[in-house]
Image (cartoon, rainbow, N blue to C red; front, side):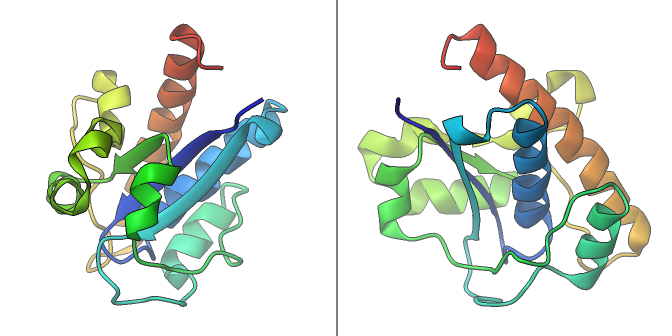
Length: 160
């Protein structure tokens, strides 16, 4: 059985996208679906390649039972567009960057993550990097709900 391959993307891959990777990984593990997926995260820029997620993101996630310290930032590669089935951007700016880099035959894979959770009435996961701890909590709130909605959409469309 082919795994469903999901890539979460933000700018530097130290706040939002590793949080989404960790939250979604925990969700599928809790539902005994981990063997059906390959999950990763990356950034559109190489600012933090090799770094662990931001310590504030790690703490906020750990407080909710999600461990991020083992993750390391990387930049999106050309091979990612062919490899992944779903490339989920945290905001419009990063979606646009991905679209510019992506070969035309793979652009259909790129979506905003929060498109899967229209009930949130938000389109983007805000970047918490320059704010306080509240921003990291807000990211987790949005990512948790979008993760559940994304998983449900996979079920409803018969991909899971």
